[in-house]
Image (tube, rainbow, N blue to C red; front, side, top):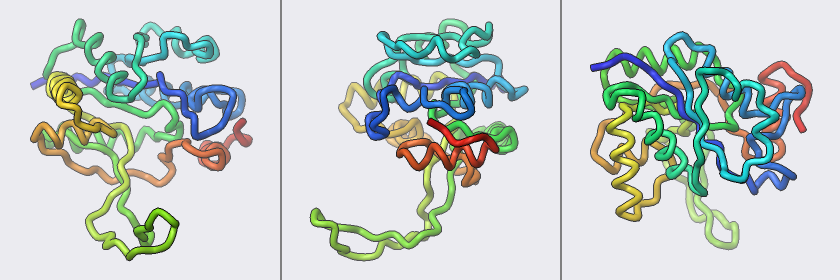
Length: 233
């Protein structure tokens, strides 16, 4: 089987929870959009041959991302949901890559991915032949709440992990799993959930706390701190 690796970034979402004037992947840290940091992390890694990015058809902000002009980057039109955007990127990538190649799917708004984290994921997946994802063990006490916000109980956190990205799987297997899950009306929240549903084994590879996803306003300042840059906006 192939050891060739490709990157995919779904970046067609609106990021409405941020309450900003633009999708969260275009919020900036030190004058650079979050998407550029995420893309740079993949392009900088020696194992990754190229990156396909799924953008909204009416995207007005992509011109702010200088790295989209890199010859190793291909842009396609994405979908309203993450799974549809990833599937569109995989369909395009399939025209120039083999089904047995590896694909690393990374969040557009997860800008603090370190090269060492990619090394760990690629090494674990290539070494075992089993697809996997970066993830972090849950260390906080977890409470289950009712509709009014009152505690119903404490959840056993043993065996619980917080999923991160990249998530790395064989191109053909991931494409087929996503397509089948969407056809079946299955709710897919990340690539690993599609692979799990399709019956493929998935391994967890320990990731770093710094590899956070910018979802709420306070996350932007924290990401800037991890990157050693002035606060985001």
